[in-house]
Structure formats: C-alpha cells, structure tokens
Image (cartoon, rainbow, N blue to C red):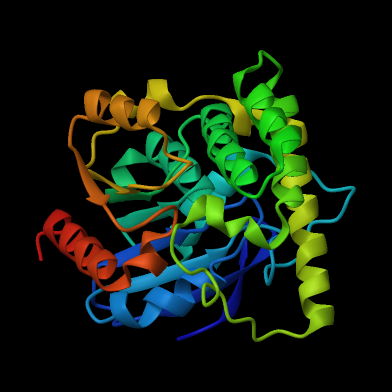
Length: 302
C-alpha cells in the first residue's frame, strides 16, 4: 500500500506504507521542521521493506499532508500525538521509530511521552538541542565560506555561533547564512556528491504549494518555542533500546550531544559512519538499511 491520506486528530496526514503487514512496523519521522518523508522513501523504502513494515508520514501540514492555514494552531506536542493516534488507527500494538534530524528530536519526545508503545528508537543525525546543533552547523559553514573567499560571511558565522544571543536569533542567523551559500549549502551537510540526493517528481506549482505549507508549519513551531527546549535531560529516561546513527562529518549531532547520548542513554548504541555527513541513509544506503533492520528485528525478537 503506497500513498494514502488518513485523518488523524482532525487533519489529513499523507501516509506511505511499504512491506508485509506481518513484519515488524517502523515509523519514519522526517526532518525539518517542514521537510517530508519523500526523499527518505526514495532511497530506503525498497531496502527496508524487505524485512520491515515501513510507515512514513508527511507531518501535520507539511508537503502532501493537508495544509495548516494561518489561523490554525500547531504545537510540537500535536506532532507527538499524531504519531500515537496513527499507531492506534493502524491497529499496531507497538512499533519502532526512526527519526532523522528534527525527526530525531520529535522521536525522543514521542518516546518520552509514550514509552510503552515503542520497541526501539533509531536516531539518524538527530538534534537533541537545537541551539547547539545550529551553532555547530555555523562553525562548519564558516570553513566553507572561508574556502570560497567569503571572509566576512565566515566571520558572521563564527560570531553567531559563539555569541550569547537567544535561540531564535541563532536560528535567524542560521537561516540567513544558509541561504547565502546557495547551491553550496549541501556541502555543509555532506562531503559526498549531493547532486542525486533528491529526484523531484512533482510540478513547479505543486512544489510551490508544498513550500507554502512547510513554511507555515515551520513558523508556527518556531513561534511556539518548544523546539528550542533541550532534550539532553530526557536522554537518561528512555527505557527502550536506542541506536544513534552518526555520520563522521555531520554538523547537526555535534560531539557534545554525542557524548551526552553515550553517558545518559541506558540502552544506547552508537554506529559511526566514517564516510557520511548528515545523510547516512543516502550516503551509505546499504549499510544503513542493514543496521536498521538488524536493530529493529533484535528489539522485536524476530
């Protein structure tokens, strides 16, 4: 079954399901805020669905899910409860959860709120503390700006990374300096060739509408402010097995956050991908699929 809309908590969510219904279920949570499960499914659906029942969603208001309009509210907790309600509607007793980047932050919140419904948690390049992730990104971007001779932008990156401004100001600095890199932006995330990262099958007008939806989703979560709350204190409360997939060159899951994971997570494992940045599922896809399948099957006792 591929690509259907399921009404969850009053909003239509776009849901993709791949694999045998009897296989262990795995929920994929995309990054952003405001991206989509589209790219991940493009690279991993066929691989993971050989052994798992892979369930991907476009989060509330994002891309192919029904739009959130300006007058509507959206809280980070709404995204958590969407996951839990979807599980119930699909008739799944327990499932595993895989979150990438912001999806990792969301996955930790979900696992903290509903630990009894999650077999295991897999975090690919997650952010446990958004401000720390953005500042580390800016430090890496400074080196890239320097390499292309843009010393003023490099200094601005470092000034924002090392300053004492609010998390919102850090985010705004990140957005500005990210846009300034143009086509080089992906080089901060991955040392590999990102040209084939995404193949878009939608029209220009569709992409424009998707962008509008994601922008509203993003702005509402920023305005609420909960995305800026550090989840580092929650890591020690996670009771389920947790796998951290970390690319050696990833700017988002910085060393400070990695060290906190190793110290605090009781049943945690770190798999380091030497050749990857922020996108191991794309950069080292075969190893990624193998690691995810083995971890989920082990947790589910298959």
